[in-house]
Amino acid sequence: MTRILKVHPQHPESAALAAAAAVLRQGGLVAFPTETVYGLGADATNAQAVGRIYAAKGRPANNPLIVHVSDPAMARRFVSRWPEAAERLAAAFWPGPLTLVLPKSALVPPAVTAGLDCVGVRMPAHPVALALIEACGLPIAAPSANPYMGVSPTQASHVAAGLDGRVELILDGGSADVGVESTVIDLCGAVPTVLRPGGISLARLRAVLGRVEVLADAPDDEAPLPSPGLAKRHYAPRAPLTLVADEQELHARLAARAAAPEALGVLSAAPLNTPVPGLTLKVLGTTPEAFASRLYASLHELDDAGVAAIYALAVPADDEWAAVRDRLGRAATALSEEP
Ligand code: TXA
Ligand code: MG
Image 1: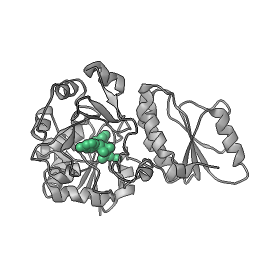
Image 2: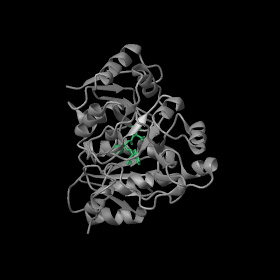
Image 3: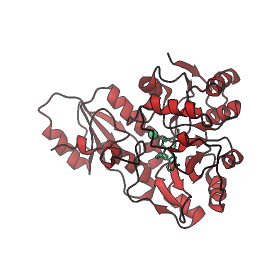
Image 4: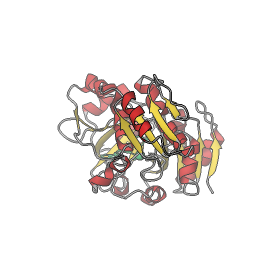
C-alpha cells in the first residue's frame, strides 16, 4: 500500500520530510511535487533504488532520468564539467523548470543515465522538493510520476491513481503549477541544444546564451532511443485525442459523430463562440502559462469522466507555446486519428 502524507506546499512539516527521507535512504521510492509535475524519486546514487523507478513505471531502461539537486553546488558534484553556459543558465533559471545535460561524474551510476556519458541535472523551484533533497542529503533521480506512456501527474491523486502500491510514499503538496515538464537543454556538444521544450522558452534561453539550437525531431520523453513509431505517443490520455485547426473544424467533427450517444471532451484556450450542449469543455486559458498549468489535470479529468474522444483546438504557433504544442502533439497520435 502506498502511504500519502499531506505537506504544506510552502512550509513542509519536518516530520513528513523525515519520513520521506528515511524511505529514500533505505532505497525506496517517494513521489513528491515539483513546480512542473510530480516526480517519482529515488536516491540517485543507489543503482538498485534507481532500478525500482523503471520497474514501478514500466519504463524501458534505455531512457535516462533527471537528477534533482537542492543547489548549483550539489549539481557540480554530479557532473565532470561545469561550463560557462551552465553557470549562466543556473544563475538565470534555477531554481526552475530547466534541466541541464552535462558530462556525468563517477558519482552517478549508469542506471541513472541509461549508460550515457551525460546526466541531466535540475534544481526544482518547489519548497517541498528542495526540502526533501536537503532532508535526505541525497540527489534524487526522478522522472514524472506516471506509468509509462501515461499523462504526467500534476496532483498527488493522479500519482495515486497511476502508481498505487508501486511507490512507498506520496508527499501531497497540492498542485504543480507550471504543469508541463522542464525544458531539457544539452550542453555536452559544441552548441547548446534544446532536447525537449518546456517551462523555459527558447527565447529566454537565447537571451542568456545567444546561440541555441533545437533538436529537430525531439526524442520522446519516455522512450527516446529505439522505436521511433512508438516514441511519438506519450502524455496520452486513454481517450484518443485529435488536434483540430479551428472551431469550424471542431463543429464539423462533432457533427460527424452526432449519431452516436457518446461523451466527448474538448480542450480550448478560450470559450467556444458557438457552445455545444452536452460537451465536456475544458477552457484552459489564453496564455501559454495558464494553458500549460491546467493541461494535464484536464486530460486526467476527461479520462475520469470516461469521454470516448477528446478534441483539442490548435494553439498559437509561436515559441511561447512550444511546450504546450509539443505535449498536445504527442497526446494526439496516429492511433487517435479519425478517418
Ligand atoms: O519537469 C521535469 O523535468 C520532471 C520533474 C519531475 O522534474 N521530470 C521529468 O522526467 O519530466 P522524465 O523522466 O519524465 O523526462 C526526462 C527527460 C526525458 O526526455 C529524457 O530523455 C531527458 O529528460 N533526459 C534525461 N537525462 C538525459 C540525458 N542524460 N541525456 C539526454 N536526455 C536526458
Ligand atoms: Mg515523463
